[in-house]
Each structure stands twice: as structure tokens, then as C-alpha cells.
Amino acid sequence: MRILLSALLILILTGASMFLGQVRLSEFEIREEGKDFRISWKTELEEDVRQFELMRRTPNSNDQFVRVFTAPAQGPGQAYAFLDSQVFKSGSDKLDYQLEAVYANGVREVVRTESMNYTSTAVRRTWGSLKAMFQ
Image 1 (cartoon, rainbow, N blue to C red):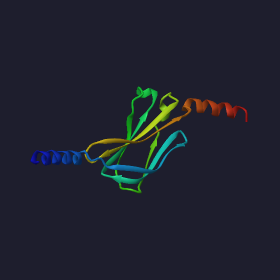
Image 2: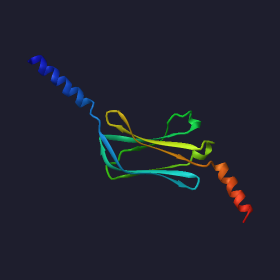
Image 3: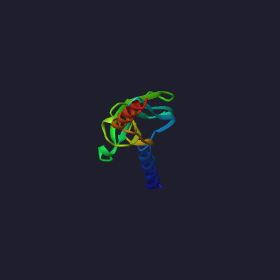
Image 4: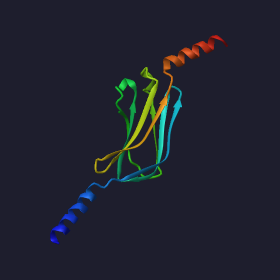
């Protein structure tokens, strides 16, 4: 009986140390602003979150997510935003953003991943030049 109680106590303590907080988003948006992208989100629940990390993946990043922004957790109901002005320096036309929560115990969780296609700055300028020629 004593061994059984000891084993049960170890399981409970191990489970408690692996406790993972929670994040629930009420909003997540990627919006073009001129040649940049504004990524914004708002949380409904932030339990034991230390910080948020926004990652970006393009073909030029060898299809690996690269951290572009870190924000300390501010609590539920708070809005977060990042203006990504480095996107158009690459020639890629597909873009992925991934939002990760980093909990107080160091565990990471992917909260949201969004993909989008865009036209590079060079193509936009060419289109603008063509459009201007016919006005």
C-alpha cells in the first residue's frame, strides 16, 4: 500500500511540474499597410504565459520559421501588434506567420499559423509604372 501511495504521489508531482498554461485568442489578423504587413492579435486567456514570439517563414528562410518579434505577456484582453517591414526584401510570394506562446516553465506552444500570398515590391512597382503609362 505504501509503495502504491508513493507511486501515485510521484505521478501527481510529475504531472504538476508538466503543467502547461493556456492561451486563447479572440482576434488574429494580418493586414497590408503599404509595403508592410501589420500582424495583430488579442488574447482572451493568458495563463502562465511569459511571452509571445512571432515567427515568419518564406522560401528565402530555407522554409524555416525565423523569430521576427517578441512581446512580453501583458495579460488577457490585451492587444499586441507588429509591423513587418522586412517582407518585400525577399523575392518570395508565399509567407507564413506563426504565433507561439512561451510559458513560465519554458514550454512553447504554437497558438496560430496563418499563410498568405503577396506580390513582391518589384512587381508592385512595375504594375504601378504600367498603370501610370495608360492614364
